[in-house]
Length: 234
Length: 325
Image 1 (cartoon, rainbow over the protein chains, first blue to last red):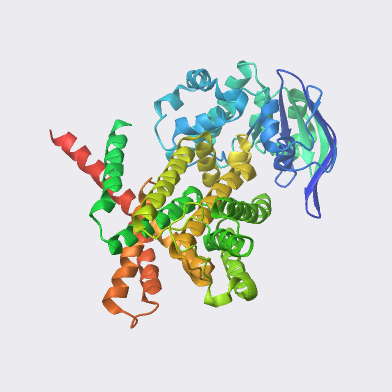
Image 2: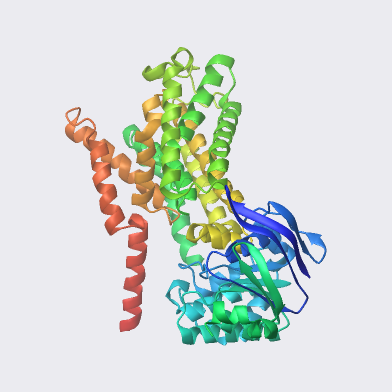
């Protein structure tokens, strides 16, 4: 469904991604794991069009995305849950969700999508009139995911959903990811929390200093000695 | 909606009948309040979304001088001159806005860019003294009588209704922006540009849109003010002084409500006139000092301006009244 071939990108004279290739099949959940500074967030930003591609191809169902501005990439069916949630802190939960359906193709379906997101996350319905900035961390993540789902994307990009959350809340957030998977969504998730993420994805790639170092099924990576030593501390 | 419409209709009725009972001096005040109220409303179209421009004097000057110069030198009537002046202001807004928004020059940095812009326009007008009259200012050629074609009127009554119509048009634009989808987008942008981009908002385009609307209104107001005064001065129509006065009035009046900027105009003009009558020429420059002090007080104690403050106050009172009954 989503294919990256030989993608390079960076900031100014600093190159953050070197020749990255990966693919995500329809209905699959794929993880990209790696330490701080590996280029995980850069990878997300490149796919969602927030950062230009220097070289390589990005295709979604055969349509080229490289070079498309961010506001059009979303129209193609890619929704991005940015790092640190990035809610609109002064708007209510419902206003945040509505903003998720901003793109023209989603606008006329706001009502039904809203019902659907509320059904998926009843907690958001309880909090619909609350100012988003006053939600707890886990609820904010839920709201950010809900907002991304409002555009009814083909694929959901999640950037470090566990970042900055308490361990118990991290568990809840991964529970949400599992729920979304069960709904049949295709998910590409970037995470430092290797142990947790390998529990919810089918396959994963290991990104180190801008290059894909390893890839395989979640099972394989969980049992890989290098991954176990370097990232799980076992 | 009914709750808002009735007072507004009443206000318009009063404003339509008002000039009948006013002497020329008060009419002059009313005209200035309406024209400046229009300009301040124009500023708040972008200011309310956190796009703080300290350089709207630039657009004011471009609108006013273009109109007057085209009239004096080429005999082009304001009906053509004003649209051209507005077009120049829009072009200027695009030339400054596009690179700023693309390169994410935001907040204080954007404010500084606009501050420089207002000064550049002021200096350009002064430098081109051969055609603009420099710091001495210029006078549009008078036709000696009231003329719709030349947009010159000997009677204040005419001007009052012209200003009233333009001011009402400004309110209409404000409401249009307020109710449109662009408002949601701009609110999102002002909260977090990255998040706004992530939900598919074309951040640069939305910011340009409000900037262009705001610049166009300001240029229009500037041209109208020049026509009304029949005298253009670079200091009153461009530069930092008037730019900051615009910011002060919009913030003090309340940039988040429809009539806030107009209340700001009422306040600034009452203040300037009060100082002029009370102290004559002994306190030249006092107005700016007082604006400065008041601005600080407003930002601390009434960040939503006078209208915002009283809006919240009446709401609170209604809530307590409802709670006690």
